[in-house]
Amino acid sequence: MSTSSLIQNAMSDNLAFSLMARLHVILRRQNGRVTDIEYMRVNPGYCRSILDMALELPNPDLHDICQKLDEIYFGEDGLFVTPPPPTPLLNRLAVRKQVSNKLDESSMPDMSTIPTPVLDHNAMVDQTYIGRLR
Image (tube, rainbow, N blue to C red; front, side, top):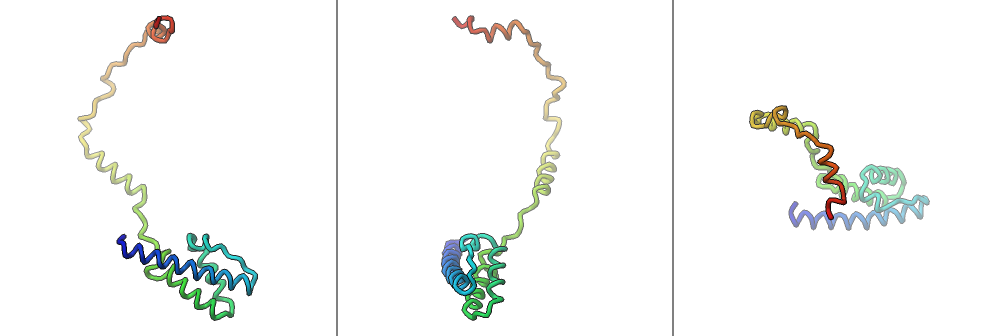
């Protein structure tokens, strides 16, 4: 993301915050409806439902504010426009497995040919006995 797009997003976010504050005040004074501005900034579902509810009211100022907020958040370059979804995890794992299968399995040592050490209980006791350190 370029610096100019970051600046544009910050300016859009500031404008959206001020518009949401106006929306909150108008809704609270006229309808007694209290909204959560911070949650509206981060949750597209809540933002959409508040905008739809405000558009149903007969206030032209609310309609203007909702139109501007809709453009800022849900427009073509909106803040809630989602990037393309990432590749599913199972597909990424399948690609990794294919790459690992291409490796030569003969380079891996055969675990059945490696001798297992014989454990001597007395040797283990001697190693753990604190008196032998003196």
